[in-house]
Image 1 (tube, one colour):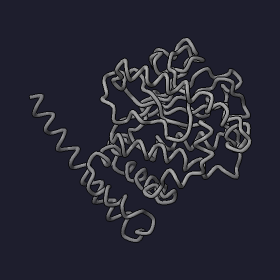
Image 2: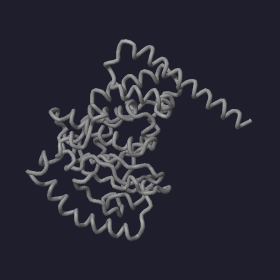
Image 3: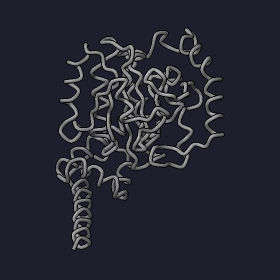
Image 4: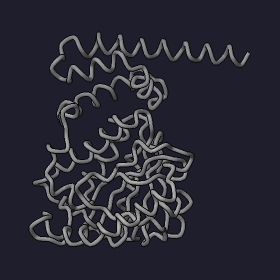
Length: 301
């Protein structure tokens, strides 16, 4: 009986996927072929998991899923996601270390770090910064299709000057609209009390389908979600990782995955620690260099 119910459920999903594709073709493509990148349209027509992702996120309401697909595909064309490469992003953005992928949470989800103290509002570079975040998300989506991310906002030493609500809303939309089912959880670590009002607004943007994914954690609580081996010392962790660029700090994508992240042997760990110690001085000096990093005091939003 259970197998029969499962079979019927799968058939219902297949029907929803086909209905979504057909309606998208009839209602959105007829007079709007220039709105989207043809590569995204083709993928929508061939990738069942992609369509199911939109449907699942919108609780299988086809009308809502179609609106989400329309907005998502327009955004992808606007930002040139299919042609976005490392070389198309200003080098200084990578050098600051304000945003990067590294490590895993206790459920085996990749960690997407935002070091909030390095962010300062600057309207002149907001579009490039949005593309920078999109670059990381698209890179991960291609390397680990179907695997969710855990976003970590490291609020240590940050203040109101480091918060740009427009950009935070963009990050929310990346997971709420542009990358369905991508968000495992969003962890806000060591949030200063003065930012409480701002994050209440953020919670309202998340919507009911994502509000349960927002977690607030103190320095002592963060290990509920992330083991010490992937936490920096200022969070009570033991991870020797120090951000530096180049290269991009996500070399462990191809490492075998266990329940708590990549499987690392003792020799690999010793090698990693030695390599990170060697990079530490370079990373600190380049971040404080007036020549190497722009701007001097962080990443201006």
